[in-house]
Image 1 (cartoon, helix red, strand yellow):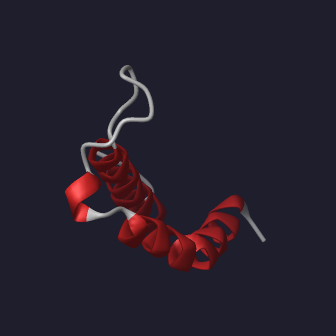
Image 2 (image 1 turned 90 degrees about the vertical axis):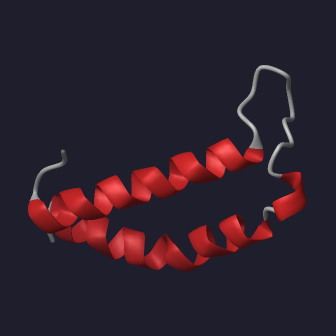
Length: 65
């Protein structure tokens, strides 16, 4: 199994956990920050979603824009 196939298999295996984590963030608590310098929950969720989209594009096309 090459790197590409390995990464695709891992992303599929982790998808359920990823979705559960995002669903666990209460809408009314998206501004929560564990530390004043930390990103809030909403910002962290958005970073994860954006990274997932970029990774999907990379795996499907072999490049990112």
